[in-house]
Image 1 (spheres, rainbow, N blue to C red):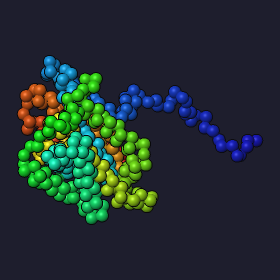
Image 2 (image 1 turned 120 degrees about the horizontal axis):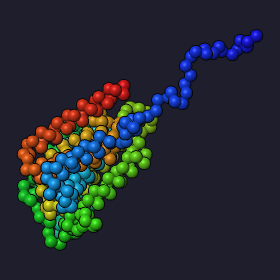
Image 3 (image 1 turned 90 degrees about the vertical axis):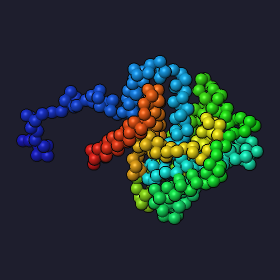
Image 4 (image 1 turned 90 degrees about the horizontal axis):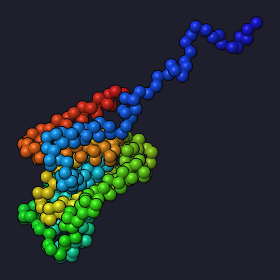
Length: 340
């Protein structure tokens, strides 16, 4: 007699063996590499450069030029990444950077020396970011409107302070200029400052409670509030961080140009936001990486460099950037749709 508690086994049913379980293909493994598409795009751009302008693209001086150009916008991009992951947007970064550079290069500020100039730029940037954060968090203004107002106001204040004139850094404050001219292992000091900001930004976003809260606030503010996160205070801190990055960028552009000007940072906000989007950060918040944003920035910077080296029209360069942004957003939407 058979034991009724033992289920009957269909002898003809196929059994799953180790060989019958699908194995990950090489393509699937490649797809798991973070930011593979961005890396491939950079490689392809490098190939285009080597083919079209081989004598100038692959030179050390051109590499330094690309990294120096990327450094200023790159620092702003780090701050923009935090804000966008947190569910916000900051349109004022270019104008705030200009205001910080002008305030730091007035004759009154320069009379106190280079270190006071640097502190002044950092404080002005952070202060403007705090104003943005307070208006958005406690004034309940839409981030787009609040930062747009700051963009207009900061640019206007910079023009008023400088009387629309370019302010030169005086001889006694050569320490700031040395950031651009002094080289360590072939690279200017400002590139190392950019690298330090990227590393610190990555650590803050990925290894601290602040970073986890940033993802939580951007992904679902109400759920974050119910979990005990002070969403309004955290939002203020995010915009203050973005303003601090603008202050650092102001110091870098002062070093590169030896000036403070109300025209500094024109359209930098668009370049920074575009780099963040290209890097895979969702405009709705809750997802993104510092490394992705920096790769997106490098793609834009190399494209600009290639257009300059090939003597192509600036208008065509803007069209190309616009197309890249559209494609990136469409790919994001497709990725989200496939996941749901």
